[in-house]
Length: 308
Image (cartoon, rainbow, N blue to C red):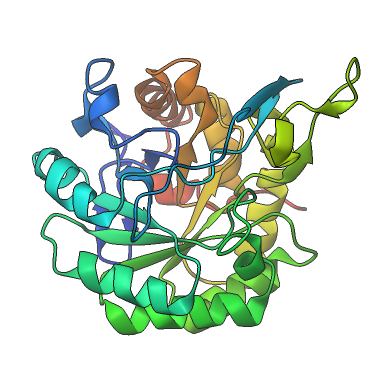
């Protein structure tokens, strides 16, 4: 092999220079990380979930550390679509990577209204449909655990835009392949998985939830990586669209597990809060691995698990 490996990835209309991007909800609106890394080195940028109206999110306590991770319930806190367009998009338009907006809503009608509003905004390359948030009572798991509901949400969004659609899937299901198929039938160009498994943490001294009145939240961090890798592999057997792997990734080694299992790209979430340079370190680590193994293109790694 001569020269540097080709790390570029295509996800429908999106061309990513490499397969690494942040996960929604852990990277703010990107500007927050601009003093730590060169954002233009990333394969794509996903901003935190946007809803029609501003959301205050869950009441405290919102996060409890656990072994190799945390249980959290943020509740999709965000500034709402109008402030996002006015205050955040001007900066995002200055960046080179594709911009993906994660979107959430409590009804099909709200999904349609939200996408109709964003579809006319320049600088947005794709939407990631959030049907899998484990800490939103409406518009969260009620969509993400029912294949018919997933189909209806995705098809509703598909009718409102011709931009690339990614559907983020919940792990809180029996058959992840069935959910992925429903998303693809609805018009998804790709799927991302997994969102956080539903979890709980208890303070034994007062016998109350460590998340207070929220009781439960999503488990994030390295603890969920083996589950996520397994579900990516299962999904790769079920659908023939690009898969974006997410869940517990802390390094290039973790990312490569997802890619070998069947992911075309990966997202890093919680570990951005531990080390804000993790994304660029992971890009460098994947390239180093490909050079060491004499792998010319990332496509030669995707879904390359030896099951013999």
